[in-house]
Length: 362
Picture 1 (spheres, one colour):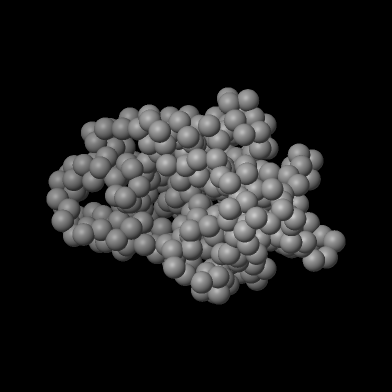
Picture 2: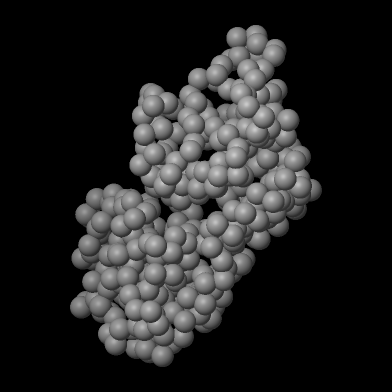
């Protein structure tokens, strides 16, 4: 349950800001603690913040629920994950300085940012339409409420941007990209193998929007139809109680995923809300992608151009797998389309685009 925050209580009654040293901009990101620094949502905002630091700005990650970990421990994790990390970590609210911009990064943090008295501007770094994470009720209504706070938004993808703007806000979006030193095809031309021998599934049972149940029911059909094809599941540690034989790899660091994808011949990644990064990274590795239909996916994935999009039922998934297993030309066409799509942009170009938007919108 979230409420409008009374910062004066946590700030010890302080009414004047701690001044940020120097003359450059100071950005403060209000971020929940993380179990996995490589998690897509966290790693993306760290990537953006560190890129902005290269522009001569001071970047502070304020972790408001540190889960018992010290600022030094969290900073060490960032240093290990983010190349040339220039991010600071603050866990004590009373140490937050006056800032040029405060960023909300989740709907919960938007309530904190709204009330924070020492920010000249406030932005919403919105990676998903988070009210869709819940059944319609208190949480979903409180999430939707934050889209009316008037913060200029930075949205992951144009569907997400449209959802924010439907509440009357203004936003700019970035398009998902990949780390090209990690995600690249096995061959320069992206030539697919003659035979499908491994299928990858992004399985996260704790994250309902990634449609774990649909994936497992579908793969059970695939396993019966193609018993010689290895099924590989990664994304979260899963107890080995599946109705078919599978290779379970658990949660992997970003650096290890490229090699995994290149070793697979088909990739399956679903989403009930905004597209995950998995289809984009699979495309960059020269892997044909199966995902679900819907505008939240189709802003990037185009059916029979760079992916196969299916109805959310196991039989439809099996039919898509059957088509790809039996038709090398379609697999190659989808790989070509995926590689062409991801070649259009880099993370650096997208982050530069957003930095320019911030300068205009603040």
